Length: 266
Ligand SMILES: Cc1cc2nc3c(=O)[nH]c(=O)nc-3n(C[C@H](O)[C@H](O)[C@H](O)COP(=O)(O)OP(=O)(O)OC[C@H]3O[C@@H](n4cnc5c(N)ncnc54)[C@H](O)[C@@H]3O)c2cc1C
Image 1 (tube, rainbow, N blue to C red):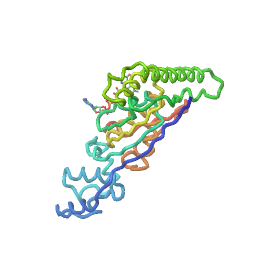
Image 2 (spheres, protein in one colour):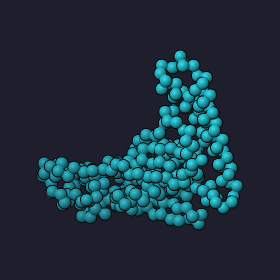
Image 3 (cartoon, rainbow, N blue to C red):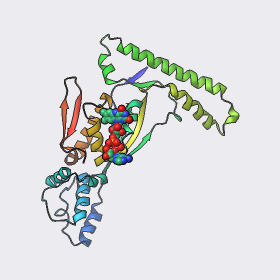
Image 4 (cartoon, rainbow, N blue to C red):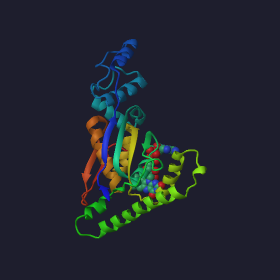
């Protein structure tokens, strides 16, 4: 049985500004050029937020001089809609089906593409060990063996069901061998546990990511998704500290970490 204990998080898409087009806009509108109008400079994510917010009041070249004050004012006032222009996409692997079931509950501003258990063979038996069980592993505790035995039974049952259905489902019921294989796998997957490893491509805007990290980085969230929320926060904070720098990470006595924003639910 193969186990994964930590997600792999790949940042695969990030926003980009077409500075020539922005310069043309500022020129056409007879407002000061970059950088007097757009103070976020090289931080493309903060620049997108700034451009969209300044467009509302046509305040290019006016108002707050420092981008830090500008963004903080938006966060303080809860002017969250301008954060929706900035999208980041992650491919996440090494997470459980129970984690992704929680992840896909986040609706506003999210897009998901997940590995299909109907199309893809699951007999490889790759599972995610929950952090609480991973802590016990190697200590001689019988927690690990209970987990192992349950997964072994599930993997065996999955393979047995695939073989039995491949023999029994009549070929004439299906238009193609692909449809038949899908019917076999979609039935056999019913015995797979929540711990089954999965892969998911998730894109969301900054407003949505902030909400996700606030909800899933909190102490009452499941340890596995909390770990993922903190990994995503670390990456996004590196990418654009102005848009995520107000989150504070704290270590708990149980060895896990939580994250909370200064500005809640913008
Ligand atoms: C610790 C924890 C425990 C949980 N336990 C359970 C549980 O036992 N059972 C369960 O079913 N779920 C549970 N959830 C999931 C939770 O109820 C939410 O479905 C999930 O956190 C997504 O939150 P959200 O709806 O705010 O996010 P999103 O869907 O991303 O929405 C973001 C915000 O947009 C607004 N919004 C989105 N859609 C609508 C809409 N249709 N109408 C009006 N406003 C909208 C809301 O303000 C919402 O907060 C739990 C979540 C957490 C963090």
